[in-house]
Image 1 (cartoon, rainbow, N blue to C red):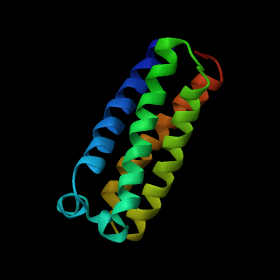
Image 2: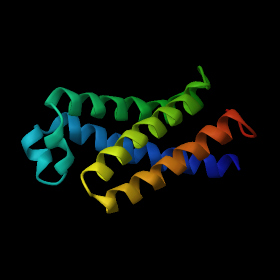
Image 3: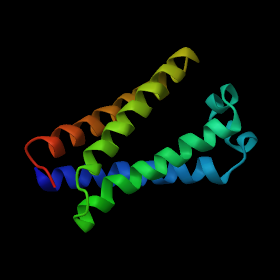
Length: 123
């Protein structure tokens, strides 16, 4: 179970690190070409989401690797679940049903990490 949780954490961390760097590193207009939802938000909001995604990616891995404050890992996963809840609402409102499916999958993976690290396999 521990290996499975690490795999899920690494997959989530890679995905959220890439997404966060993209949101922080590109102007809103460039992001809007592939991610229409950014049109509904101010640029600072999009950059803030990107920063949260980067922090979540770090929180999924670093505490487990260093052994420092390991409780941060399930808390980072909980933060991802909350962000995915907001993403689901945004995509649903915009009629982007296919994106909702991806958000649900990421939400489920994050909840698995929350359950596993707070429950049977703490770091």
